[in-house]
Length: 280
Length: 312
Image (cartoon, rainbow over all chains, first blue to last red; front, top):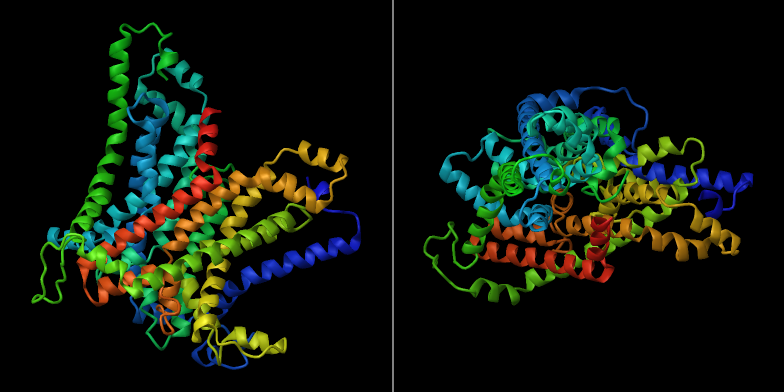
């Protein structure tokens, strides 16, 4: 289609397109580059004006992050909470998706849209009741509270994306296994599941990302023990002042895992982000 | 499944169907339990709180049942109405701009020149960055005196901007940050949609002598509509809930110029602990999101699209 929408062949228009693409890329890349540079600057270099482009890099800000802000605890909390929530959402959601895609369940569409509505819910509605209930149950400021909440938030993605992936596997494959004497469970475990692996991996990355980056719920449902990385990163900001190096280092530390993970799993990203609606 | 299973030599069809339904329910059970306990229950709790005067911070004030009093108060709460208007403005600007930018980028990158794949991968990175980190980074860059943005402007001979420091520019800055972070999301989806379009309509348009602009508005855009609608819908829902970046950069200021709904709600709930009233406000917010989504869905024929997809 490219040949029909844009005139090609002229060297000048080719250079023009490259220029536009480079400008766009620079606009989107610059803040990330700047964050990374700032995280590697010393306190003197960071507030220099005009801003320094060349400097001797130091890991001082990262060291402070671990000594002053307890980043290690937060990192462990984040990893534990997000991994478990992702795992639970994947298991529950995939089972539900299989049920919706392959079984004769009552009110199928109603259930599916009910699950989807979680995606629309403003966290502000349920965060106060969750806070109050958690206080009463004694699970406030424990990882389990956030695990439960993030599991819920992951469900709409898993159910909708996996339903599409399951529907795309021809039923005849499963039926053949059933006729060969597999039980329903064996049929799912041995035949369907292996075919679903790419879809599962893609969905997992997406819900991992959303849970890992979540701030509002984490900031209210934890106080000291279960604080996650975004919460301690936000604490590097005071109303009027901001510790530039610390903030940038926290930003790099928490963004890095998601960027690496998602860029490795780019293939099905679109499918996952649109809850299965658009093919990537 | 049942239709095809009927052809299998299994004893009773009715028992088979009942078994199917039972297994289906078992499979759905974990999801339904999580949704009820973690989702529905707090929601109902919040609905209940919204008809009380519950405010644990002032025990001498009336805490009991107030009926729809909180909702009535909300309708005359100038601060709340101000927040609604700001949020809608923010959403329209942010989603509109990032959609336009994303379509242009998708068209550009669909030329598929050498090296574009690498640039495309770099462009999607902003949507992966933790919003809190995005807020911190932009706040550092937007510092009026020492920030790198004003430095870059000075290189181009443009006078320094107040960024988050003045009312109108603060709102514009928040839109800029949102557009920066979420245009990649729109771009990724629209680019995927563009890549999947069939070739023949474009060939037909070329034979009919359509100009590139005509081709875009008469052929590309209508065919991209489903993808654009889905991407916009997801963005609208998230833009209305925007909290993290604004919390870090302006906290709703200066002088309430960026006091989006979620920021105002957080203040009512966590600063004033006026929880009954806060619950009523969050339910109204939920209704606003629902209304916006329904209007959008109706206007763009989204349900028709979903049904066609199901029918296929």
